[in-house]
Amino acid sequence: MQIVLSAHFDIAKPVPFIKLDEGKLTGLIDNFAGVFVAYQAARKTGIPLFLTNFEETGMKGAREVAKKLNKDTLVIVVDTTRDAKDKDGYIGNVYNLKLPKKLPSKLFIMPGYFEETEDETWIYGHEFDFPCLYFGVPIPHDLDYHATNNSIKISTIDKSINVLIAVIKHLQGVSS
Image (tube, rainbow, N blue to C red):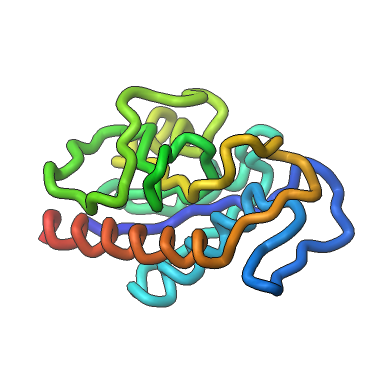
């Protein structure tokens, strides 16, 4: 089974810039924290990454990607979440896939579906019937997702990168 990553780069509000320095990412961090995690995980594992547009307005980018994928592809959608509890990553919205029992302990596994029809996993997993899951990068719980003055520590992003890589390697081992 091939694994690909998908992360959206569109923005919910116009922002003049996003700043990366002093140990943090500041500005509109949804979904740029997810883009950074997906990019690094793709680079370090060699799996393909699709950066999609229009997640906020009909998920047209995910639909276009889905049309290009082989049916034996597992899609991991990378985005941000406020629901990872005290963990370094989050898995939810699992479609057409039985999760292995021994995933990294630094993951929070959300049963069922969260915002079922408002996420790209809905497109890949429900509409196109791919095995699919949502990997969430934890952002502070009290943040307004689309505020333009948010910040997240780079160390949080780095921890999520490591957990996502561990998940990818684990899923590659299970599917071989």
